[in-house]
Structure formats: C-alpha cells, structure tokens
Image 1: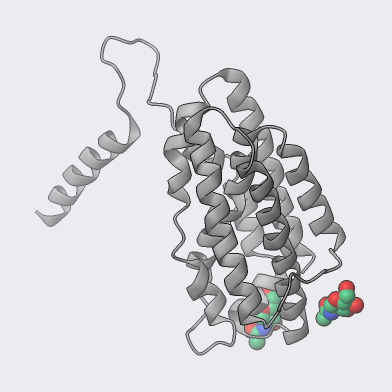
Image 2 (image 1 turned 135 degrees about the vertical axis):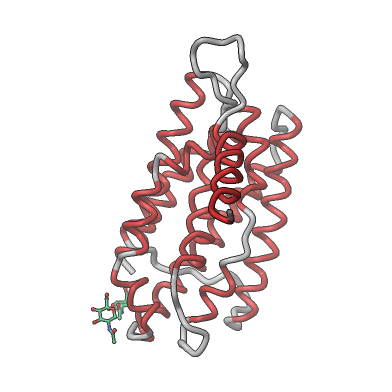
Length: 228
Ligand SMILES: *[C@@H]1O[C@H](CO)[C@@H](O)[C@H](O)[C@H]1NC(C)=O
Ligand SMILES: *[C@@H]1O[C@H](CO)[C@@H](O)[C@H](O)[C@H]1NC(C)=O
C-alpha cells in the first residue's frame, strides 16, 4: 500500500517536474530552463572537481595547512579582483535595467563579502597577491566578459553554483579542521541568477554563447582547485 502510494506520488511528481508541454504540440517543447541546462551540461566537471586531491584531503582532514593558506590567498585575490570588475561595470549605464540592477546588487554583495574576508585576515588594505597560472587564466577570461554585462553575469554563476554544490557534497565531519569551508559555503543561493538568465538567454545565439562561457568558467574553477 505504501509502495503504491509512493509510486503514484513519484509518477505525479515526475510528470510535474519533467514537462509542461502544450497538449496540441507534436514536438516536445518543454519550458526552457537555460539556467538548469547550463549546470546539467557541466555536472561532470562538478564531480571531477569534487574528486581533486585538494578537496578530498580537505574532506578527510589530511590537507596540509600551507596548501589551504595558499588557496585562501588565491581566493582573496579572486574576490578582490572580481569585486573591482563589478564596481567598474556597476558605474556604467547598462541597459536593460534588470541586468544593471543585478550587476549593482552583485557588486554590493561582493564588496561586503570582500571587506569581511580582508577583516578576518587582518588586511588593512587590499593585498597584492601573485596569482597562480590557473588564477591568471580565470581572471583574464572574466576581463574579456566585461564587454557584455549579460555574459559577465553568466560568467559569475559557475563559481556561485559550484561552491554551494561542493560544500553540500563534501562529507567533511564537524570536528575536521576544514569544516568551516563546508559550513560557510553550503548556504549560498545561486538560484537568484535563474529568472534573469532564463529571461535574457532567449535566442539560439545567446544560449550558445552562454553555454560556452559557463563551460569555460567551470573548467577555470576545476583548474583552480586542481592547482591548489
Ligand atoms: C585522504 O584523501 C587522500 C586523497 O583522496 C588520500 O590519498 C588519503 O589516503 C586520504 N587519507 C586518509 C587519512 O583517509
Ligand atoms: C604556496 O605558494 C608558494 C608561492 O607560490 C609556493 O612556493 C609554495 O610551494 C606553496 N605551498 C604549498 C604547500 O603548495
């Protein structure tokens, strides 16, 4: 009885989540969800990233403290640099308005986060940190994306979504020295990107470009963890 109820529920749930197809349409034209497609097309990179030794050692607590310090310094350089890019973009007259507002909101949020990080590590001013090759490549691609605000937004998403996913999937126990990395990153909300991206990535060309950007940034994230 329980099983039947469960199966019925699963079936209904699946039907509900899979498709909202118009009944009169022959081809399957599910509601487009570019936001989810971008992630689903790159889920293999997420799993590969979870398997890199840096994260595996973080999970089992064997990671050398010096490696974690280096990683943290590279991450600080990343947030300082991306915040500066967002600042520069938020000062431009971006159209349409919703993309402009989104960039502004991202800037304020990154600025707040960066300030908090610098404070935690007792930096009185922005530090100058020598980037690794992986970080140089990552940041130079961001710089290219600045030419188009929508592309820049797409470029920000992999980091956002991947870190939350990694933090949720790491089985780091609470008494592990690196538990805070999991705890601090698992509650992010990448889905705030969803309405904007699904609205504006509405042509074949834009979707194609977004896929290319998202994939490249997932690779850049993977390379960052790999090199850490
Ligand atoms: C921790 O993980 C690393 C990478 O997978 C592995 O080489 C190492 O043997 C593990 N150490 C312990 C104590 O489980
Ligand atoms: C940390 O970074 C420095 C500078 O790039 C490097 O010389 C050192 O080997 C790194 N330490 C570890 C443990 O990876």
